[in-house]
Amino acid sequence: MAKDPGRVLIFDTTLRDGEQSPGAGLNLEEKLAIAKQLARLGVDVIEAGFPFASAGDFAAVQRIAQQVGGEHGPIICGLARASRADIKACADAVAPAPWRRIHTFIATSDIHLEHKLCKSRKDVLAIVPDMVSYARSLIEDVEFSCEDAVRTDPEFLYEVIEAAIAAGATTINIPDTVGYTTPSEFGTLIAGINQHVSNIGEAVISVHGHNDLGLAVANFLEAIKNGARQLECTINGIGERAGNASLEELVMVMHVRRRYFNPFLGRNENSPTPLTAVHTKELTKTSRLVSNLTGMVVQPNKAIVGANAFAHESGIHQDGVLKNRLTYEIIDACTVGLKDSRISLGKLSGRSAMRARLEELGYCLARDDLDEAFARFKELADRKREITDRDLEAIVSDQVQQPEARFQLKFVQVSCGSSSRPTATVTLADEEGGENTISAVGTGPVDAVCHALNLLADIPNNLVEFSVKSVTEGIDAMGEVTIRLRHDSSLYSGHAADTDVVVATAMAFVNALNRLVAGQKRRPLHPQKDPIVLGAKPTL
Image (cartoon, rainbow, N blue to C red; front, side, top):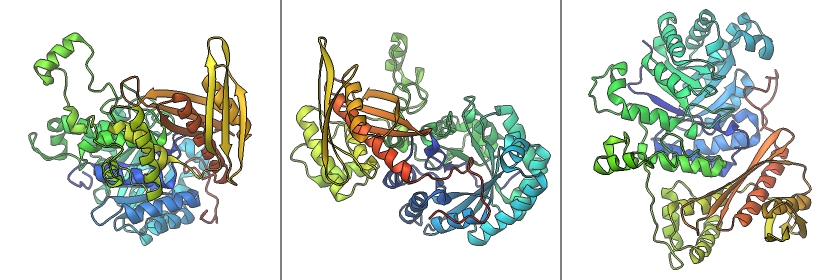
């Protein structure tokens, strides 16, 4: 049996693999806000990014290491390909954290060796101990991943793992990189590693998996039963393609079905000791924060954190729940922190009260941003009778989310009706302080606004997604708008909220345009898709 930490470690990769979701790029302040909330959530490891990718990624990982990785905080981890330049950049970025880790990887499946790396098995067996030992010379905590492990010949996989551990790896990660495996197959693979790798007792077995076939969570649970003790997952299951294994689902399965999983960890079936260190009451708050900042809406029927997860429409269900909640609920909504708090803030409330509530929700704003958010709050209070935490989150996420602005929305007005052609008039300010106004027509008010903004910005793009949803119930609810623009095969998202959905649309579109401009200035490397260039220097 492999080295066992006594519980299941939660390795959160929302800020690294999750950020690779199309259009979900985060700026430094957004990453920092999420990292602080992940620390409150109680995850064991935060994979903060890929430091070698760009100066921005390096700075974000370093800032998180400085401000989040406290003495009693989580391990701060960075990703590095199996190259000295990547590994050195990673070590430098995580250096400020008391608890730090380098996560290095190389592909091991024949299809990756032949078509991506253009290397032989012998080459990989030489690279792995060299790079792992180099990483270990810089930081004691080293994780090694065999990319595309589930499609790797098991005998070769055992050799690679054994070499990595001998060179100093303390965690061995087994990724299902393309979401291909099934639970029984994955369990057999983990069991085989425990059985055939002679020095596996010196390392923790970790698993990482994508959800292409909808099996990521089920695969991870089978891995736990066969000796895996670290799960690499993301909030809301975000990530490339169909996403990653969902953190909230994994944690709550182990919470609700603790008696079932206890024996697999060598415990008495009735042991009350939690299987993870996660504070489950922070799950809903964390889910909303990530959704707000990435602009990736959580589907209503999403397990644990979806809007309908604790809703009962059927009369039979409602009757049963009223008599005894256990008839149709296996989780108390309070366990995941689900509540609709109405805050007592108004025109006469001080900024300190608002700041305290925002910090509880996971947001820490600079003074200028707080002042602007408070002004928007007071403006909303004039239009809306009751203000909820969801309203406050919608307001402040706009403040945290703003990229470096080339364009600022100054004015938007629309004219439309059953017998008139929808027309929008928009004024944009540029980075030099100049203002330009233009009018445009469209098929509807939203189309007219987007057309006008494109004429003013003069940046080629295609609108690939427009979505609007109500933040809360009622006719006076704020509308949240998410927009995604495509430019040169890349997606850039914008997100905004207002009681006027046309105004929210304009704000979201400008936000997306600013991200597009910023994205053209920095084109970070992708850890899996960009090749290693020998002798390359960090892009810092």
